[in-house]
Length: 213
Image (cartoon, rainbow, N blue to C red; front, side, top):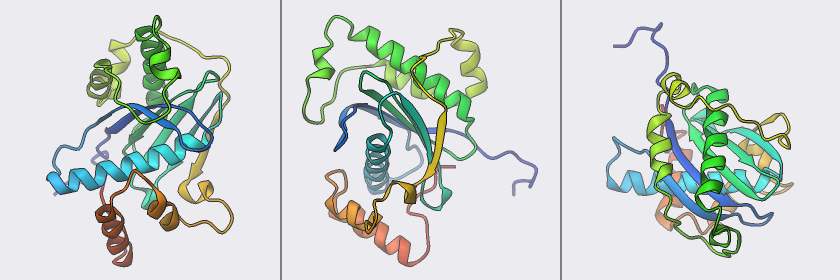
């Protein structure tokens, strides 16, 4: 049994890179860390992670960054959208340092843009979800699991001056008047019928559909 003084486990669960659009951001590539879950749990968790990330990305306007607490406070989704329309989301456990999350995202933005510097249409011209080959995303996901070590690895200090202060929200803040999360899930292309039903059953039992810590 863990001591009450034991610090909570912190980790990064996912990273998604998007082409930002006001109505339906387009997925460019993704990396997830769902070790410990069996196959169907991974599928369901992965779909809910993608759904939440897309919803939060859509709400994070050009040149801003926002950290959104997920339902039941199971984790936090950090999103940074550049003025050029490239957006990165990462979902972390509740205790993961916010500053480290944005340090990582900043490094990803710079590295991704450099990787496609001579072929920007690969991500700027796409009009539907795709899977760009960007192997460094897995490297970022693994290296930043321990933020204190990652800070030593990535010593480059960068600033994107157009980005404002971090906004903080919860999932309810993303809903329009008269809109429900259940209704958005039912319409989402990210969620299978099985994932929606799993969420509804967990909600009725007042349980979390997954845990990120």
